[in-house]
Image 1 (tube, rainbow over the protein chains, first blue to last red):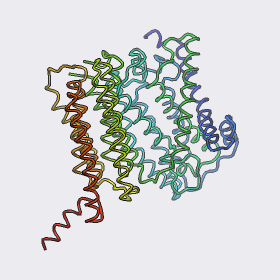
Image 2: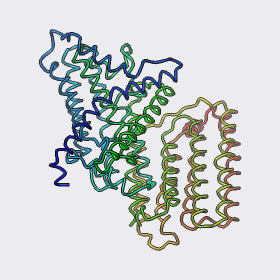
Image 3: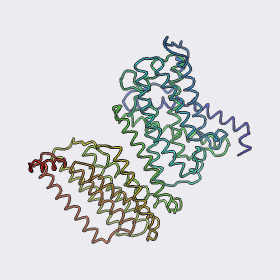
Image 4: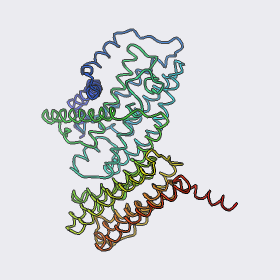
Length: 322
Length: 226
């Protein structure tokens, strides 16, 4: 492990993995949109559409409101940067990369919190009604989602005896197929948290600009050009991060444990298949469910917390033994 | 004994037992009457699966019979009877949101911890692997009691009562490989008769106070006094 930390090839791989996150995130979003369109009997946009959108936004002039401060300009870079850093530490293709040293789940939650903090500040900075409303809603949702996320993570940590993502995944691989009630509940809790945090349908609708119920869109309403592109990119990255987290922690099979080309290729194929499947599930869920009223979001997140707590309890009662 | 030392079948038993506990929590929180009945049916199904898996794991064929009994009675017949009752009383769209949902859920969680604490001193049992399931079943019983205390709707109170019986059954399967068949048949018959009797009672209650909200029974008595 020590010599591995210093080897340039391993660092290169970590860098490639981060870049892959960046490149694949719009594709995942496009895939979800496409499947959803198919389910609604529409043809849907091609899979490259989000790349074109981002390219177009980068080429456009960025307009900034007169009433804003410097924070408004800095926020997109901070939000995007923190999300990208969060993505860089999540094991995508292989475990035990050099970045695994900081791949702690609590660090990950911290990166998300940092991005969210600046996102909400930027939402309020322009002084429009929508921005402030979106910011307060985002804070409501995240304040309830974070405990559920951490509880789910602690459930995993109690089994793997580590909060390090890479070790958790490696432990899972070692243990083989074990049916754990606690993992079932942690998975359900994490899925609900992921839906709330990435602003998918029962909590927020990612496809709307018009409803009074919007959360994420309300905060980035004032952005345009490259700033908007960065914000959109950050949201796509976040979806990808949660997808990879869920698929690699709970279904780690296929991820590379050694750095040979064959193993890495297998890892790439496995994660692509897992994310594609997850995307289909998300699209089906979004087609079947209707968006709930904002005031029911706390109930939804209480449910996530209940799942996580049940996971914790069932770990203690059923799995440890005395 | 850690879960990794068990066979896959026993692990599946644990997962299903945890699911039974989860359905108890869902019963506690579900506001809609019809969904509550459906959840109760799911709990019965999970119980039947637990008992048939235990039968396979321990090679006790008479448990298959009790699994079948549970499936037909608690997952199919009683939910169907309750369903028909609700339709006849025209309560299909009835929903009764829980008062203080967070506190009630916390109370449920506390009950789970309490029942684990109760079960901890039990040292000697025939089945070491399923010992911890007794904690789960005790929690299901106590949560059933909590449902009966917290919910005002008479049908849901009955479902709470039946889910207590589910907890007892789970304890029997986990601790002693099920009860003797005669006892089991007797209990099953008891539950069935109870369901029928409750149905008759529902009609009387709803005729006399035009609602199944049992809190109103208190008010009726107060008016009589004055």
